Structure formats: C-alpha cells, structure tokens
Length: 233
Length: 233
DNA sequence: CGTGGGCTTGATAGTCCTCAAGTCGGGTGG
DNA sequence: CCACCCGACTTGAGGACTATCAAGCCCACG
Image 1: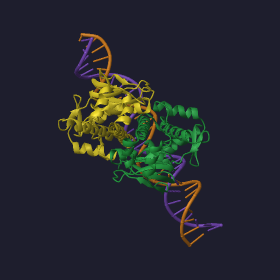
Image 2: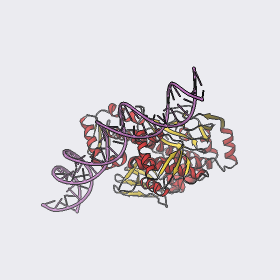
Image 3: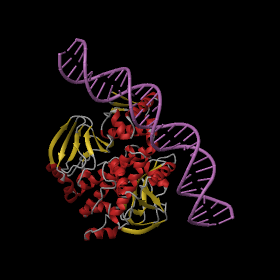
Image 4: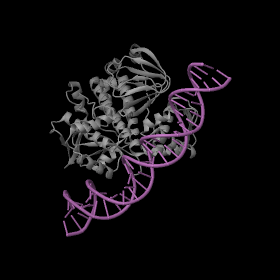
C-alpha cells in the first residue's frame, strides 16, 4: 500500500490543497476517530503508525488493520456516512485532516482521484480478507508469522529498510488483539519463533533470521503472498 | 445491502445495458470465479446465493462472505486487476455477466455510478471487518448467532420474508468454513441453540424462536448491529 | 527510591479438534 | 418397487491448543 496521494495531476492537487484543514499531532495510544462518530473527518498519516479496531464489549477489542505513513483514514466513513470502527495512534503520529467533502468532490470532478480512492478501499478490503483467512484457518504460529511478514513487506514497498530488519512498534497486547490470542500466549509463541531461529522482536524492531521459512509459514496459510496486493498509484 | 443497480439515471442505465454480455446459470456448488484468474468478469446475481472464499492449502478454506441476489461479484477484481479470492454458487444460481470495463467507464463517465460502486465496496469491507471481529473475539455460540442474525437481516432488508423465518441454504460445512470451526462442533453448538429455544435450522430454513436473545448475543460481540451497514442506493 | 506498566512464566482448566463409527434420507439402477 | 449407495449429518471419546489466573521480574519514569 503506497502513498495514495502521490503523482496527482493539477486538478487533483488543487482539490487536495483546498481540502487540507489542519495538522494534528498525537502521542502514542490516543484516539484519532471513534466508532459511531458523526462529524467524520478524513486523515492522511504523515508519519507514525495507527490502527483500526472495533470494541466488542467485555473489555475485548479486535484490531482490524494497521495504518502506515502515507495512508488514509476514514475514507469509508465518508462513503458510508458513519464510522464503523475506531482508530488510535500506535506511535507518536502526525496527520493532516482533510475536509470529508473531498471524497464526493473527487468522484464528481476528478475521476482519476475517485478511482484511486476506490482502489485504495478495495486493497484494504483484500487485506482484511487475508487477515480473516488467517484467523479462521491458522494456529498461533501461523498468525504471528503472517502479521510479521505482512507488515515487513508493506514497509519494504514504501521505504528503504535494512534487509530483514524493520520498525515494529507493536506491543504484545497489540499482537494479541489483532490475532485473536492472549498476551501470554503471544509471548510463548514469540519465544518459540526465536528459539527456532525464525524471527525475533528486539527493541521494537523486527529482526528476521530466516525469511524463506517465515514467509513459507505466512504464505501457506493466507493463500497468497502476505500483505499484497499493494496499490501502485 | 440492497440491489445496487436500482434507480439509475439514463446514462448509467445505458452503460449497464451495453456492458451486459450474457446470462449464466449454475448448479449448486459450482465455480463462478477463481483466485488468480486473469480474464476478470463482473457478475450481477439475479437469483440464488453464492459465497466468496480463499483456499489456504491443507484442504482448508475460509468463507469470507455470502452473496445474495441483487449483489455484485468481482468489483474489486476489476479495480485491482486480479481476483484475490474464489467464488462458488451455494444454491442454484443465475447471474448476468458484465463487461469488466464497465468499472472504469463508470468512474470516468458516470460519477454517480462510480460512487455507488465505491460505496458498495466500502459496505462489503465493513461487513468483513465485523466478521473479523467476531472470529477474533467470539466463541462458537456467538459466531453462529452472529452469522444467522446477519443473514436474516440482510434478507429482511431486501425481501418480504416471513417473520422469524427465512431461507438458509448453508450446510454445516459452510458454517464451519465461514466461522473457523469444524462441522462436528457446529453441530453440537446448533443442538445447544435449539435446546435453549433460541433458533433452529429446519429444512434449509432458519427458524428463529427468540430473536431478542439471539440478537443480543450477535450484537454484543460484533460491536454493533450484525449485518449493517446496508447500502441504500 | 518507590511506582506502575509491560513482559515473562507456571499451573490449571476449558473450548474446540481429531478421528471414528453409526444414522438418516434421497437418488439411482435393477 | 425395492435394494443399494453415497453424502450429509450425528454422536462419542480422547487429545491438542489456547485461555485464565496469578505471581514475579524488569525497566522507565517521576
């Protein structure tokens, strides 16, 4: 998933400029948008990570996806008229707030931008489909391997990152909430992955020791390369 | 999720007419589209049910969503250029095949239709988000209750169906593949739901005995009314 | 130096899976 | 019309995986 607002033409750029309202900066773990919100806003993440999630009562939540720099938050809310999930910052974060009317204007006046938005949503949906497959069919090791490979590849697409080594700001509890497991079991499974020489988390970075084996686990379960498709806009 | 091709204006209707290629009829459990397919087609379901799924090796598959009459198949494939999942008929089924170029044309020449497509994908995505939440957080009873209520409400939105009674063509194995459980356990859990006087499946129809309690279980876990949002086009 | 949050680890219990056998019903061929 | 057959469903016993709960550790922070 690349920066969806790169290489725009003049009309599109003008629309975007006009829609930019303000810049927001957030400490880690702060709300950016809340489920059922009515005053919907659109955000473009400038730097830092965020995540989408749903609360399901009982002190339990499901993380639906992680959002990386260059990506957009709230696009579906502007289409459906209502937030269907919440968003929080994972790390320190900076985002540009955009006028939500941008979405409608894009479809009317800048078809290429509208198409780009549609592709973006389709790609997000495809990623959730993959995620669902892994939760439905995979055990703890496969789930963790999938998420790691997926986030590694998404970063590799965008940034020059060191080989087999990339930022990984997720805490145990984020992994647990994303993968439908408990923090305790996440921990035990991470130990096994490290002991088996596959991968380890060190100082909030992912250190991959055996990418082929790790990717084999991740891709076997998701039915395709974890983390694809990406949107090349 | 209603029929997304209702109440179009003249331009849109003309586009649609021109794009209609042929009608296909399928027996139950036949492939309509396959993962990684390149010759992508767009289908509008005229009658019957279908389902989207991914294979994850090991003889295991994950059903991602069920598709009801009036809905569209393959929209994201035309946006992303590639099928990311397979589709099969669940019941006997009739569908109209549409020229996949319709998608691009809609965004260029019929903005309202493009917007409708985007909304449709956003709603599908929102439903997958809900599904993911239920798989991540819910136990067997909650998962089954959620799927039942979700499919009941989707049908109630479209059709005049008898109160607390609607078609339900899913076999045990479909429930299992959708909910990340085994057929055996599905069966045991269905027994419990029937014994508790909540709901039963009879002659391929859903018979709801206590909607408030069933819906309470379903909605508690998904963090909102199961099956919404619908797209009112 | 005290405090708190995140991490780690162990023991126990519960949910769900696996495998296998048996039942039922509808369709087919004799 | 009946016997057969196959797939879907049902049920049971044992085992695997993961949750729950609780305690101790470690480090960053005030």
